[in-house]
Length: 266
Image 1: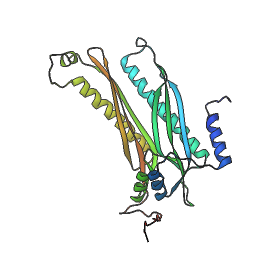
Image 2 (image 1 turned 45 degrees about the horizontal axis):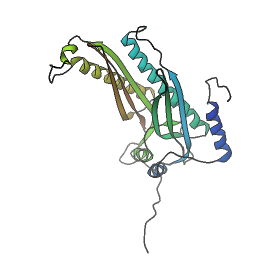
Image 3 (image 1 turned 180 degrees about the vertical axis):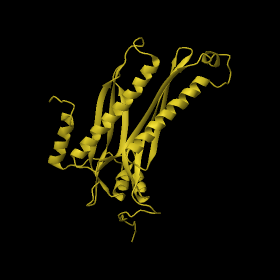
């Protein structure tokens, strides 16, 4: 296998691009409704594309770092892993002259205690018009959703992620979580989940602004928490979605007509 210096496409991805150029074969991960929706929005599938990276998390010892440092490193680890996977997916889409990528699925898989694989997988599409976007757009939205978005005067711009991490200690937690506490609010956990979700949403919003978009559609939010002994808790929250930009103001945007085949029995 050829050596790779980390720049450009990985050798295997480059081989996929070359096979695509030679054969002209078009592959798609879109469902039938997804392909129809993409066509209604003026796009045709050009091929499936992928970006992946295996990363080692930056800490391995509970003694070497504090819980706060560990959880911040965890958020940075997720942020960089997804960023690299999406960047490589976009680079592969550009290499096959696509205008965007629909239906992106993001995943993370642990390979051992410290290494994880981040994968971004989607279907590259090309606009069926003389006008081309100035950059490769990315979205987790499906073909039908993109079709509805375009008809409403909006276009997808970029997949955006946001992460928040925090750790805190509260000695009251040992009393609020013991067997005899009954139904009571656990203050530390409430404060933690509120803080990390707020931080994740703020980072997500900043990413939307940095993309120059007018808004965003959130596709999912996640939350993971860990106990730190009897009196501590830490957690990481994430937000995933698509930044969107308005190109038409009004009730309905101008779109290409879709020809429907009537099912007449005559």
